Amino acid sequence: MAPQPKLKLALYWAASCGGCEIAMVELREKLLVVDEVAEILFWPVAVDVKYKDVEAMPDKNIDVCLFNGAVRTSENEHLAHLMRKKSKVLVAFGSCATEGCIPGLANLYDRQSIFDYVYLESPSVDNPGKVVPQTAYQMPEGEIRIPKFYNTVKTLGQTVDVDYFLPGCPPQPHQIWAVIEAILGGKLPPKGSVVGANEKTVCEECKHTRQEKKIKKFYRIYEMIPDSTQCLLDQGIICAGPATRGGCGSLCTKVDIPCRGCYGPPPHVVDQGAALLSAVASVVDAETEEEAARIVGEIPDPVGTFYRFGLPSSLLHRAQLKKKTA
Amino acid sequence: MSEKNFEPRIIGFLCNWCTYTAADTAGVSRMEQPANVDVIRVMCTGRIEPSFILKAFAEGADGVIVSGCHPPGDCHYTNGNFKTFRRMPLVEALLAQFGIEKGRFHWGWISGAEAPKWAQLARDFTEQVRSLGPLDWSRQLASKED
Image 1 (spheres, rainbow over the protein chains, first blue to last red):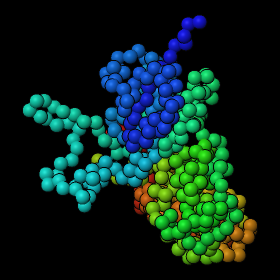
Image 2 (image 1 turned 90 degrees about the horizontal axis):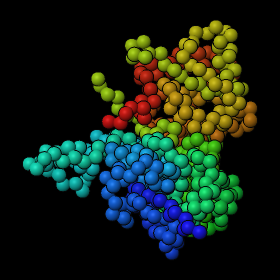
Image 3 (image 1 turned 180 degrees about the vertical axis):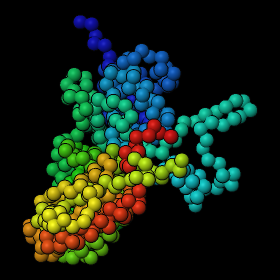
Image 4 (image 1 turned 90 degrees about the vertical axis):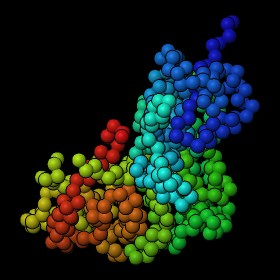
């Protein structure tokens, strides 16, 4: 029997931290199996293949592309379109590509305010020439260009058609492996599915017991040492478990650290932040409006807390942009 | 719609037992109120998920009203309005971070016997939102990125 042709695999990172690449390496000895069954055509972090090499490939040449990172710049956007064109199956890999993740929190600001702070106002900045990035700059040797930094971070799915979503910050190695096995075995679910995760919330996998207690004060994690058996939310620690898809094995709550919500909303939840807000408000023990307002008012940065991983994919996507004065 | 002849679109989530009854009474009593408020009747304000409010803004509302029974004792379901007053301050804080002006969201209590109060709220809130101008949230993502 002729040997089966190798699976043609590509991996790309857009606006991401590199944690998704680490998650791939965390496959450890199974990475050798991946290498055995797949030919890696493109993986900037590990393989020296240039964009122009990918551009030269015939369309749909790549069998599967695991695309991590959000779409923050024109380069990210270009590569999203390119990888879509060259790949049969495009997988949004990790939280950034799936729902925007930490880079997406910048959607509370716009390009101007980010540049102003990062290049001019931040206390650690020394920039006497007030240099801020330009997309093009004239040098004696010719014009040099860098990608455009957009006002809004978008998810991969908001930019191009995506076949599968593999959530997690980063996706857990056993889940990545399960997906690779499914790809190799040709057992992929219907297009548009979330893969490598569960259908129920993190609470289903959590060792802590919910007792529906009510609390008078929310605590941040440095303010108390939580009990290892009781629900963290019952103890006044904001835990995203009730509004987050399981599949990670409740890694964080296993060590008494609250869930931060990186696997995104469970099925049928439209807006993870709104769902978490409801869950958090439900544990507040208040008999009067004033008391309720005081207790929930102590929660710092509600958007950053409730939408830590999903601001770009939320109902509102971003904070209101200033209207153009035309 | 140009800003000149702007008519605000307002979504009012009203509880069946109190504020909806008040709005109904205001209607049949022919109290003067603008046609800008589209009322969505819910069984209880405790039923209003924060995502309803966000969805309203995301899909074109210029303002949102949430109104139900006076706490502590008016709620038909004993404590539905308690759920509301625990959630809504957080929704307010959320909307502020999203840059949605304070005047575009109102939550409070109007009993079934307070029809004039409803008519007054509908008038005042509509004018308040009118002065803020169109919200037009779809433009946040619609534009080809610049």
